[in-house]
Every structure is written in structure tokens, then in C-alpha cells.
Image (cartoon, rainbow, N blue to C red; front, side, top):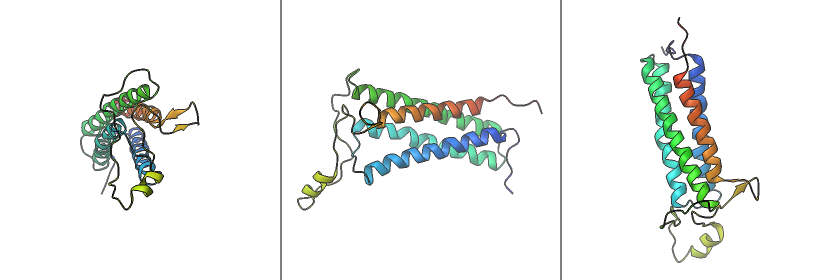
Length: 176
């Protein structure tokens, strides 16, 4: 029978669940904008996805270890590591947003990455349906005009997830 590790209390488990679900929704949204919306990610966009691929499994290990009554240090440790990875993801998002706002230069080889394979038959169709942008231009901003780009929103979400994960992992325990 699954039992919640009593030293990794309900608050920490709820925080870890929140981090996992919001992180999963974020990376699925990125894929949705790419596959359904036609936004082809640049090299910096693809780099910002890596922290999600690393941190989400760590959060899942944290949750599972708490549920199957493994040592609390495992649940806390993996959650803290995930938090650090998300903070690195926030750095990547800030860096990319700064490149888009022309606050600093982007990489010299800033080109479109992850483009769909094109053939002579579907070239015109794909050119009409796919928005291709470089790392230096925001392909979308919300709210429109002066709002945050995909990179900016990623920085905000990653920062929040990192803070929640680390705070939950470091939360003081009751003496009981």
C-alpha cells in the first residue's frame, strides 16, 4: 500500500505536484505552439526546453519516493535539484529575452532550429503555415505589442517553479 512519507509532509508533496503539473503543462504548451501553432523554435528556444526534460523526471522521482515511503532525503534532494535546474532554465529564458530585446548579443550561429523536413511537393505549403524567426526576434508577445515573449514567459514560469521547488525541499519540519 502506498503511504506518504511522514517526514515529507503534505505541503511539500502538494508543492512538488504543483511544480510537476505546471512544468509539464509548460513544456506541452511549447510543443503545442510548435506542432499546432506552426512556431518553429530557434536554437535558444530548444535550449530552454532542456531544463524541463531534466527537472520533470527529478520531480517525479521526488513524488514517487514520498508516496512509496522512501527516505525523505531522496524526496527533498531530488526536488531541490529540480529547483536548481528550473532556476537555470530561468537564466536561459532571461538570456534569450535579452537577446530579443537587443540588450545583449545572441550567439553568432543564431539560426532556426527544429524545422520540419521540406520536399518540393510541400515547400510552398510549409512556407505559408510555418513562422520562422531568428533568436533575435520574438515571434509572439503576450500581451500583444510590448508584452513578454515565449522566452520571457519561460523565464517567469521557470523562476516560479524553481523557487517553489527549493522552498518546499528546504521547508522546516515539525519536531514531531
